[in-house]
Amino acid sequence: MPPDSDLIDRALKMGSLLLDAATHSSRKRASNHNSIVWPLPPDLTFKIFSMLDTQSLCYVSAACSFFSKCAKDPLCYQNLDLTTLVPKVNNAVVATMIQRAGKALRSLKLGVVPATACSPGFCQPMVSTIRKAIVEAPNFSWNDKRSRQGRESSVLTRCCLSPLSGDGGAPGALLRKLHLYNIERMDSTSLCCALSACPSLLDLEIVGIHVELRQTLMSVSANCHLIERLFFESSRTGRDDSLKAQTCSELVNNCPHLTSLSLRGFKLHDCKVRILVKGFRKLKYVDFSSSYSITGNFLRNLGNCTGGNLLEVLILRDCMHLKELEVIKFLTAILAGDFKLLMHLDISNREGLACEADWYHRCYSSSSNMPIKQVLEARPDMRLVAEYPSEGSYAETFDADMNSDISLQFSSPTSDGSIFMSTSESSYNSDHGSGNEEGQDAVIYGESSDEDNNMNL
Image 1 (tube, rainbow, N blue to C red):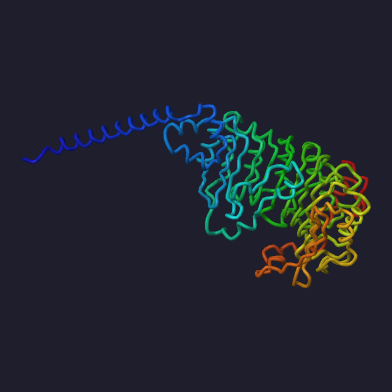
Image 2: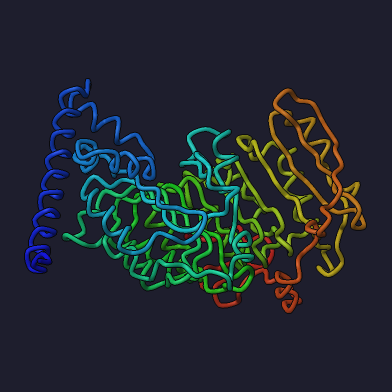
């Protein structure tokens, strides 16, 4: 007689329940065993787990039930690094991690970074010494991500940072560091909303995000009064011309603790740059790499004011409108004794420096009028980088190491011609002028197109 089918089903269900119960009991026994044999007290275990990076913490949490309980302590999530090589972190993961951290959240890194930059320590903290300041910029940029566009899309949306405002704003209240990379769907409104929940922010880094410079700086000025480091690289190189002089002035007045300022790839005019550099009284690090419309006029008489004379690092690499005459005047000011604290200067340009009369006419190698060697002899402690193409064949690099040696090295351009401006970045050529300043802003702040010495901030 064949067995009853109902009896078979009941036996299978009972066997499944018994297996689940046995598995649960086995896990509970293993967890109790681990808690007994684990040699460290809970507080020390939490401390060790809090020193792990986010990915390692997730691996530890999956090891056993005991470790999973230990890894749920908020202190373990105070420094969240959710950056990845390819998009695989979604909003739910971000929300879960921020919720676990709660009020203990101090640092958040989020987004997609290239493989060359996704190594421990690729993003340096705020400058504390000059050596750290020189290498504080990330080892990647928006341009590194262009090859991935069209083949993959970010799984993070514009509301990925909304958990910072949750629970009455507790997660973002004590956040000190926020680094965002290549989040394609992020917009200005969402970013500004997140910044409004971070009043204690000290370090803000934004790379490859489609947000407007003016709106972002207005939000920082309104909400992040303690900020010390601001790094912002445009995702639309040379096209963002939104910055206004009033925004610069408000940022200077509302964020007096800023020591490091990097605005890369934006269309910046000299009058606005001067407001920023001259206005911040603690500014030590400045990076305006790949910024269009800067001619160098803002450097005039900057060394005798409190803001500019404290500079330790100045980077003007690949500023396409930077004029040779302004560079010569700046180097002459250094020889005269200004900028005594300056230890790193980068005035390199893959297109060469612009001539005074016509910026289309480029200086492809350092002319005899530029007192580069004199500066290196007078300031052996300063590193001066001046790389220019010579008829497209080589670049000259002048460098003074800390042992006061003067070196001249030649390097060939890369096989893909990267020493010259790429086609995708040449759209600024439609601007035939130097873009030195905007008339309306110059009138408001009493600036002239020449010396502009008597500006009142």
